[in-house]
Length: 412
Image (cartoon, rainbow, N blue to C red):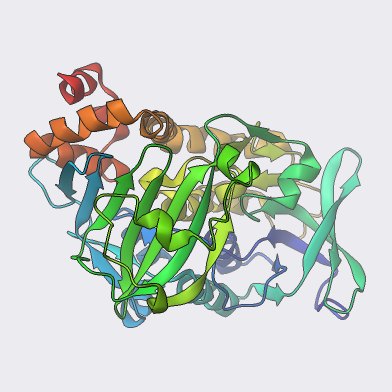
């Protein structure tokens, strides 16, 4: 609760305690800034997520100082990705491959968000961030045209105004900060995900799997201790039409996919089905006077490529790099948008190719005939499959697979 906070004015207030928020708070606090981190949840808590960290996330975890803790916790290692078309045709790509771009390790980590988020939050607190759980941000405070603070409601319904030089909106897909700033934009295709933890799934072999259907897809991968995250992604229209209950019919829906039939037992569900979405949402601009957005609050495309956690962690580093020089001791005025332009440019350099790749794959998944053609082609060309999987793993430059020559080889 915020009844008697240590400060009424911080250098930075971070809204959201997920990977983007915790990593941003950690880095800012490490630099000596006074940081308040607020989240309405109480941790540990589960989250609807693929729970996959792409290979390029590993060096970031090391820079944040949490890699050893992740390695000690329950986790799984994924060595590549498999994609299965609606007909059952399949292709596989591995991270360690002969394409000239070595991953940091030949595998990526997969770990429950209940463990991962708690690890990052504890690390942020150790660096000096003031972490407050059960604190809901309801509104922004403005001063002379700039964001200057937040209105917070704690568990006892008390409302407190907290001020800071900069507000970091890291509160996810349904960001209150982004909505209050009027920056949210959406576009098709829009989809919703239903995720669950299932024990003892047959055929899990150290590879992430993506099974494409006629009107949706399923992603699954182990997260340690013989538990697998399973995510069913369907069009928003199917959910709004209320033709079926996807939580109740979760396992029946999985049976519709050729590569999944017979692999699950309903009694082995170890975490209730959670929902998230709709996707394809982003902020028109990630900065304003006194505030910036990071992670899913800034952009959230279709999760087919599983880049969300990497983007959150790398975006936090970019935000901190921009903010730290401006958070000089003794200064009290809000950080103006002009001072945040380096963050805008850095995000564009870092993510533009990945955004294009995500949109391209997301559109292709909604076109079954195209998916069939590409998967069959990649099954015959494992070198191309390895390159594409490396690009989705964030260690192969996206431009290599967005080049006209590569795209042509996918089809002919």
